[in-house]
Length: 184
Image (tube, rainbow, N blue to C red):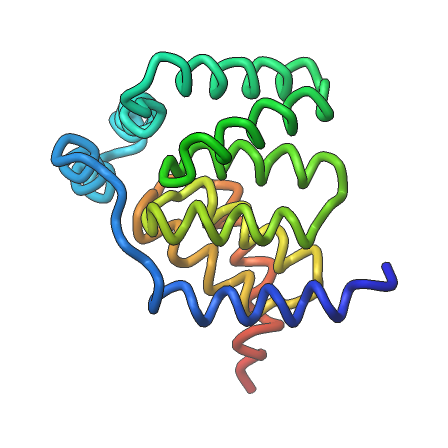
């Protein structure tokens, strides 16, 4: 990948600038659900995650909700160009709606547009710093770009919010020696 170093530099810049630009998008309900999720057992976590995603998917506009649904439907059937069209329209008309940006990030990732993926993830996390899906995606992207310390950090932020993610735990375990080294 000839743009790997450029994308990596952009990703590093994004990751260090996020705390400076982040402001929370959420409701009292989603905030309460996130607090419960951090304390939940594995069985309760799945239910809470579903409720959180449902809260996050409410734009406040029926038209924007329809664009989100159509984008997600297109992603499900792997119609990536259509998904990108719907999510782009959504982010154009509702730029403060984090789920539109997250959907756009997923569509860009599926089309191997890593720079645009990072940009969409940055928007998602600027609007909703506790978006565990976006943080998980950022961790996977860092991992793919061979940035183990940044991947480990993103994954650890996921587990602070969503402690019952076996895939993230496995990724962190795999990255741990690269990040922390081995004990002598």
